[in-house]
Amino acid sequence: MREAARAATGSGWTPINGRLKVQIVHYHERPDALDVDNMVKPINDAMKNGVVFIDDRLITDLYGARRRLSEAFQLEHASKELVAAIDAGQDFVHIVVTPAPDPREVLA
Image (cartoon, rainbow, N blue to C red; front, side, top):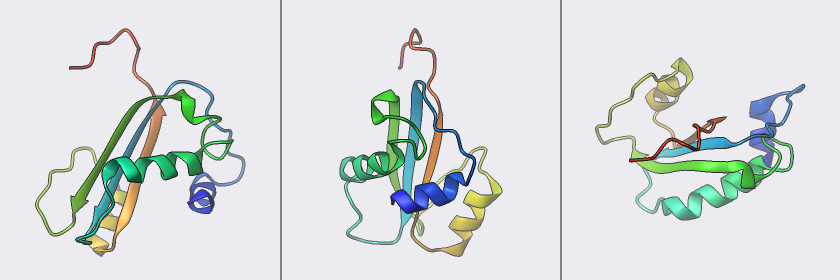
């Protein structure tokens, strides 16, 4: 996973050192897909230590999910890369790391 994270960030990447929001979605067709809570920890660990961000303690907001490719689901504001990956019909994990929202905002 760490090598995939390094490849995704490319050379010249500056690791993020600020409060983060991480979204991880596993698109799959496997009946034995990992539990979401067991999926996110190793992925976050692979992205820390300067690969994507400095430390996973910077993650203040985390969203994890799994979606079966054969079931209906709705995408909003999907990138062309995400749409292409879904159309390919192969298992994959989609990860988005962004700055975290203002901590004064109350989550509903």
